Image 1 (cartoon, rainbow, N blue to C red):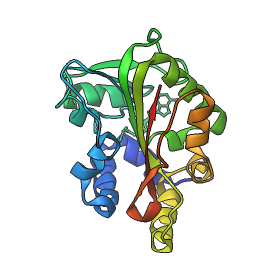
Image 2: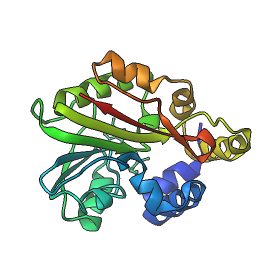
Image 3: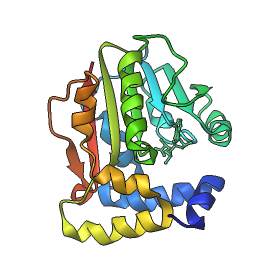
Length: 208
Ligand SMILES: C[S@@+](CC[C@H](N)C(=O)[O-])C[C@H]1O[C@@H](n2cnc3c(N)ncnc32)[C@H](O)[C@@H]1O
């Protein structure tokens, strides 16, 4: 599924950023959107942070403001080239999230924004296992991604967005119990996901 707009949004960063800005209006703007998964977390200069599926560094940009030790990981060489230009303060690694080239218990915080909806269900399980492996004991996995709206007003907008820009995996994510999957790999989630934008976005913080 999806349309040529998906290809273009990855090819042209201005289009990706424009669409993200438009979508972020529902949570009060891009600045607020980029902090959603980090609310209530303490990030210090020496906190070891991984921005998983960092894309062109949109969230990495926020993370480097608090930590001097941020690594961005993505499978796309083009996105990483842009991330290196946009946010040179971070280090970058080209790799698949399912098989990360990091030692066990390496990071204090793994963050990921709007990327898990691109994964097949089996991939999600592998990724969460990897996140568990690379987190230090007591470390946190913070994620923000789509969720089935709880307010019907948000269904038409989300559906249109999915038809234009997303693939089947985004629809599958709406039916996926992310908390259940995280708990299956050993992470603990003390609260239900925090829902924003009429329930169309979920924020989860899970601890190792
Ligand atoms: C929608 S973008 C999100 C980018 C950024 N995190 C943000 O908040 O805007 C999803 C990113 O995930 C990356 N990606 C998708 N599947 C991946 C995988 N299996 N391993 C590593 N990166 C992956 C893509 O290359 C893309 O840059």
